[in-house]
Image (cartoon, rainbow, N blue to C red; front, top):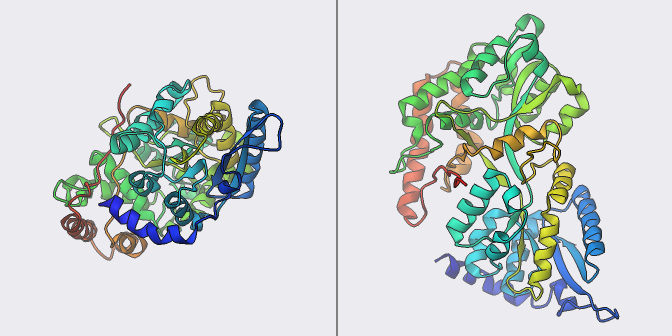
Length: 453
């Protein structure tokens, strides 16, 4: 069905771009002007920025020096135009040889036949065993081979959450750095001293605040979001208990009073200015922390484990590298992807863009300081990918207005915890069950467990 829909949508596009791809400029990919013929491959970056362009220019120059018979021609396309343009190029068989692929695009590009399977090349790749458990077990196997029967992209880097902590506060309080949610809740209380304007937790009470609450709730639901019939796990008794426990961080004063209005910027400022001791955030905070805090005052530690010994995390590849099914130079394209994906170049890329490298760091030399906390989270075989909230049309309304308004009513003592969870759970249950009825072929969101090596 998806293939039919995709093909139908793209027929019109094919008529409008008959010869717009720059790859047509060198149709056979050969430099006719050189005595030693070079193969030219085209590469498109779908999220250009000064930092990305600088990195790719440098790595392409290094690749061409190491491979004098191959030339790489880089193109860029703005992110908000990228899907449409690549889909049109795929339909007209003019897609560049190597493509920056957004993971969710596979749902369209694989059934349409636009991408070259990379399984055989990936399985023979010499650096395969150096990947973190999350990348090798979930990104490559569970989210690609298990779904599409083949590998279609090599991830460039990952985004995920970890805990930024004031290690000097923990040392002064004689507390070990937390490894579990239980230890985290204890530390939030112990680090709090209102007389010094110090609070344990950088609590997010405003937009997207429920996401951080739900991250803990999934630690008691085994990473699941729904029962088999589409009923939200928020209606479980243990979810109510977890909701109360997490929101007690704010209600019992282990976060600043005005944190009920905190979003991303306020959370980060609260941590970097010395008001809060623990912050749940992604890698993008590293640069801010480095610029405003002393190195010996803070660090990043892995996401906490639940009572069952598992980490339930949200994480994904930012982009990946794919090869066009129509490429005339698949060997050279894979050689370029191998070069981009080497441990050394992946580290340069990750450092330049503050992303999480795809490789293990067993000798602790590939990454330094705070990035190690993110790598350790993703290299733990007990890190599971949590189920998402689904694909129903009402999800935008739930996320953008409903969920945080309901939680704030509870934080302001305008409704009970029981009523809050019921309202949230009923909304999700009604929307998910309707979606399941209308789309019986779409599987229920489910926790993803990595394949053990």
